[in-house]
Image (cartoon, rainbow, N blue to C red):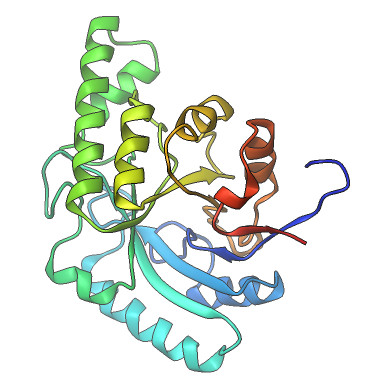
Length: 248
C-alpha cells in the first residue's frame, strides 16, 4: 500500500459457493460481505460447461430464487446473481458455456478462461503451461486463445473479464483493447496471479477500467482485496481506474 494511505473495497462481484466448488452457501457469502462492510456482492459460480465443478444447469432458477429471498432479508447490501461463464471456441452460447435461454436468471455475466472445458484448447494449454508443447505450438495457441477471448468479449455483454492471462498464452494488449471498446472491466485477482504487475502496466495503456476481486471460494475470503490493490499500486495504476476500490 502507498505510505499513509488506506483503501477499502466497495463491492465484490466474483465469489463462489457450494453450487460450484466453493465451501459456503449463498447466504454464508452474504453474511461475510455484510461483515466486511461491502455495499454490493455477486454470486458468480463457475459456468455449467466445466467438467468437474460447473453449476448444474437446473440450479440456476434455484439460485435466482435464493438471491431474491436474500435481497429482502439483507436490504443493507445490493445482491446480484451472475455466473463466471467459461470462454470457449465453440459451445452452448456465443463463445461462452451459457445459453441464451439461461441469461434470464442473471443480473450480469462475468467470464474467464479455465482448464476442464471442452472446446477450449485446454489440453494444449495445459501441456504448454507444463513445458510439454513446442514453442511453435504455443504461439499458435496464443492466437487461438486470444481470438476466442476477443470474440467472447464482443459477442456478449460481460461485466468482468476474470483473471485475464491465466492458464494460457494470450495477447493481453489486444484483449485490453477489446475490453476498452466494450466497457468490460479487467480483473486484478487476489486468488490468481493475473493480471500480473506487467500485464496491468500493459493494459493501462488502453482506456480500460479495472476491478479487484476476491474470487472467494470460502466465505472468509469474501471482500479480500489487499493483494490486488498492492499489485496495482506497484504497477503505478491510478486507483481511480479501479471501479470498486476507494481511499478511506
